[in-house]
Length: 264
Image (cartoon, rainbow, N blue to C red; front, side, top):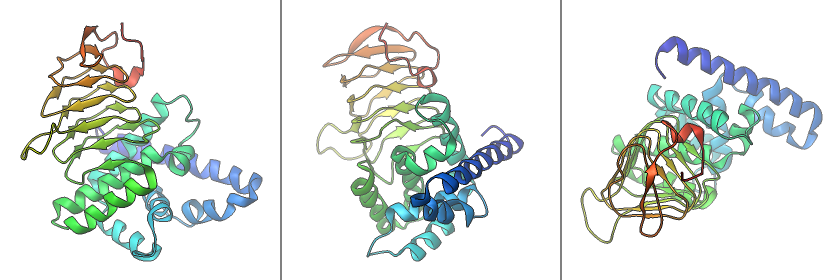
């Protein structure tokens, strides 16, 4: 977020709306009352609610809910908080199916997956690679999303549908990027070192696109659905095809926010 005042305002808006929607659910959907009680009504703030929701999705026999909740709470920091808020706002802005912030918290596995990764990444940077890898494996099993804990992601990320998204160890995704399902940010083989794509800000990556190797997709670029990208993509350029070829300039300065899937 740009500044602390803007951040606090966004947190209050998101949390207030979630509590309002939770009240409606508690009144009208008896079967979901225990869910809203645990995730919303028994929590003091937005970030406790996010961790509670993650805990319900990821806890299992190896790590119980109480232990996982405590562990994630200890890792939570201002960087994760800022990213979570930016992700909430990005999803609400870009996905017309998202009617309110509670939908994101309760039902959007793309949000859950990228949030899990944010905790795993912090653990990885702390030298707790085993716990980080364990969270990665759980996210892969539960959400169908496989992001290496060392991969670096900025704020305002939309993983739309998210199923089948893969990002390798040295992948970098900057701020305000929208990625649809079945996208791969992969390496070209068994090479070592820096070997995965670098996605600059405001990029839109269409469903099923495969971006392979240590290449750069420039700011504001658009990758057509089903494309295989093997070379650098210039900023504000649209590419598509197998292998991907230049179609023209991006129609929007910020394709990630516009979510315009047309190629010309």
